[in-house]
Length: 197
Length: 43
Image (tube, rainbow over all chains, first blue to last red; front, top):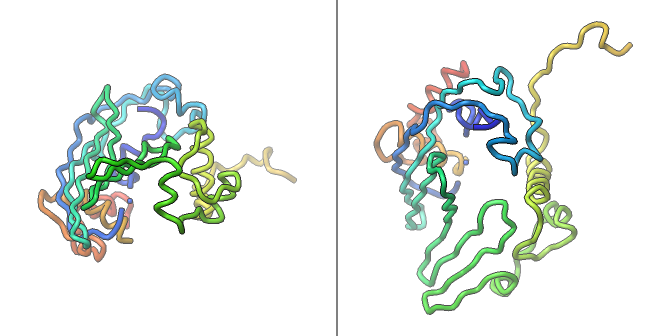
């Protein structure tokens, strides 16, 4: 575990669409964690997030996991579709990252999160479509104004080749611009000798 | 709201051990998972 203790806390961790019902098996497989330096646990993220600290926690602290770290669900949608969702933080040594939508004509493979890779469509007759050829299937698709500006003026694109830091920065900027300002917790009061005249 | 109700529906079902209806989660009729959070937050 690195600095984002909130992910492990039920009351702080927290979203998907038109569903009717769901059945889930959830569990806490690993309840005991030690807070380690992000540079050690997730060096790829450290460049962006190593500065973050949560109040009340320091490196080396023990953290008890109270939020489920494993969830296997079956979801019934209003359309009649059935979804299957499996997620766990405890499958060490492998990163499956498989996300697909299966339909009557074929299957849509969603790309890995924050990869910039293109989706891929495989039809049951054996043909496969990916990259910019996908754009022919969605002639009306285009990025909204905010995304288009952040992605260097592009309006129609199927993927992009950027570093993790660039992708993460753009998506964060998009979220901030779309969702508005985030309420800030009040900070510590300034001592009288720190206050500006 | 529907998206959030589905996300919390997963947790409500995991807590109760039964299938849950998403509308019941959205309307607060199924809330045993949320109740613990509300109590913790003083809501």
